[in-house]
Image: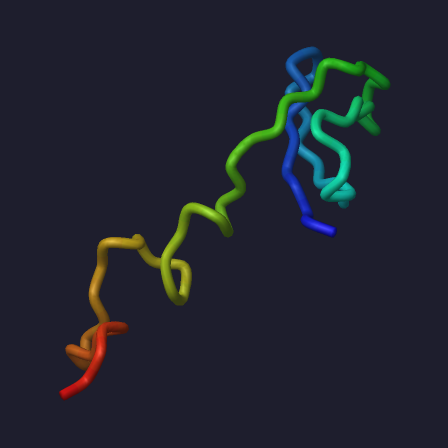
Length: 69
């Protein structure tokens, strides 16, 4: 099951939920205020590159993920 990050528009609380892949748009309730309008957001993990850096940054060793040779 994928882990999604949500933000509540009522109290601005951020939280995570495991969601079954068969559920297209599950109703998620905020654990802080009980609001049911929480929106899924992009988590920092999903938007960052290796070792927490930018996805466009390169490693200092000059190595790449492309084919060698």
